[in-house]
Image (cartoon, rainbow, N blue to C red; front, side, top):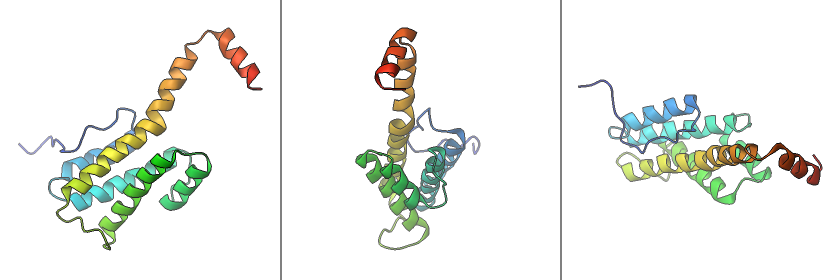
Length: 147
């Protein structure tokens, strides 16, 4: 059976935006045949994620720089840069050879899920719990913080 294809990568974070999820799933579907192609698609996911996080999305490097200036956790910056550099080398050969390196490509899937967890899922969860506080408590917190 050829359709539907089932990918080999870890399941995508459920909070991953749909347009990014489509590319993630495509990368998962080709991981076995082309780790290099999968890495390039995961790099595209990072570019789209930066745009989703409010950056222009034209230069991943510049987007990451702006996210860092806005207080991005240094560990997430490292994860973004790993995906950026490895994915870039997948389409522009250089120091990293990905033709047969499935393990490296698989690590990019895990890093993308981690980035989505830290940048989207965790803030979403905190906001949901905060919104469940009584209104008086939220107003008192906002007053304390000068909002």
